[in-house]
Image (tube, rainbow, N blue to C red):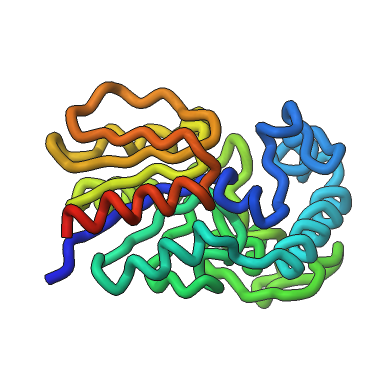
Length: 229
């Protein structure tokens, strides 16, 4: 059996594909206050603004391409059972070829009824006000907004606990509960952290810190992993 490599990724890995992050813009995303476009309160206040915002994000993701970090993780599937837990709503991991991807915060190419969060639908175009699901509820992006529960967090924690090797790539580890996933890592498991500005992680004997952008740091990690397998 292949050793299990669990990878937690954040906005930094997709930033190199041209997708901007909240943190790089001081709480603004393309000029929008994040709570105006990514919270239940923002939805209640101006649902059309929220729909327009995510329609633009959907076009941004469609135009973006996987970068060397996405492609490098997909290539590691030859030697590892790779499970990716991503905070990102884009599909760049999948387009790079990764087979096991858990999206903690939802997916930009999915939508759901405001009446039923359990059933989602695929979408590639725009969601408009007045577009209804089969249950009669207005359709909204299937995204976990600030202040909403993260339904897949328990599944993600179980995946981290099963890791033989662990990596954190492109995340500031300040958004919870996702940031707390590192606490489920078993003692003694080799771990890597890659980012151009390294997040704080409690001291671990087997922690390798790579202070580089994801596309460069992935090269160093792959070289180090060759010594493990």
